[in-house]
Figure 1 (tube, one colour):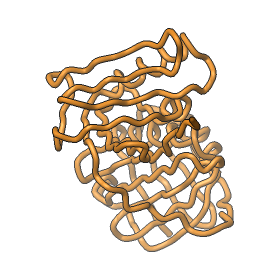
Figure 2 (cartoon, helix red, strand yellow):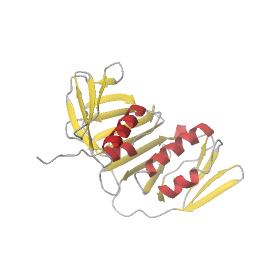
Figure 3 (cartoon, helix red, strand yellow):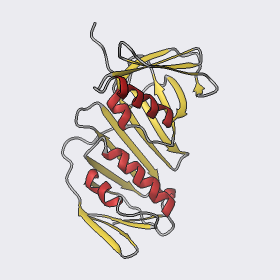
Figure 4 (tube, one colour):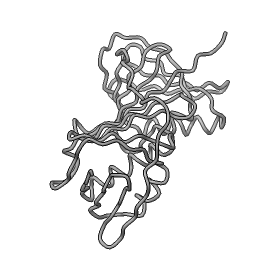
Length: 242
């Protein structure tokens, strides 16, 4: 039996992460160990993989972690988590999941996840760019205003400049100069397109984001707090037929 204690601040972070995952994925497999918690899941259309790793240091002293595995409907789990605000929360994770704080307590059954266990792919490193997720959120919202359907958003990186373009005859174009983005391996030249809807679902407002991309290659969008936790979204590229 895993028993997790979440401080008020860390519970807020945990709930925000679970809420974000629930917009993309319905059922997930929790993999528990003495080192922490892992979720590796794929959306139903097989376009996006989500990988969450939370180190044991994220949880309060007194937490008990052990090796275990169980499935959860993350949408229902998220609905329950939203009922707790501004308080220390206790989670018991076993055949029955229990969520408790003060005098309030919920429980839900775990589920069996069918199919093979999802494994994180070993992706090559391309252009690695750091920017504010609020910028990414604004780009997606601008894209919605000119193209409400799931059009593509094209990322181009060259000469220390990131350009984001919508697939629309009257597309909106954004330029981030080097003083607005952090860049690794500056000499890389990249161009690739991705689904606007999936980019929208993978955006967590207020967080810094690391993006790894290559030409016509899956994009990795990473949110993290040092070695304490990280959430990766790996989204397949849109390949246009000529």
